[in-house]
Image (cartoon, rainbow, N blue to C red; front, side, top):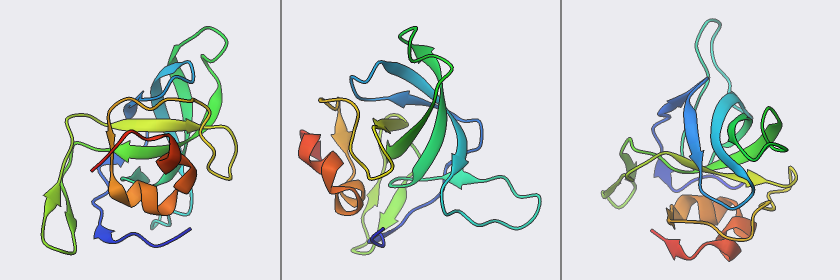
Length: 133
């Protein structure tokens, strides 16, 4: 994975509910774990923009519910700082469901804007995105 060009604050802890912003069939995801996130003993894992997570589908189509899926966080409410000094925040927390661990999205359309840091790290998601902030 490429390094990010921003100081991302990890604002989505373990068990946070996130909206799925694609047309994969999932509506609400629950964070189970964050890949390559090391913590000290007893600290809860948390995720930020551009992180690869494992999530459980809480709400969505009947065939998708109660499935464990891979996803990438594309928006978060908590502001984070880019190295040029600007602070970026979104209206909601959102993720994109992935087809495989390589980063290919399951859906064919993404609703709403996507952070530039996600597009740098995950080029397959950038191809599907309409708005990049």
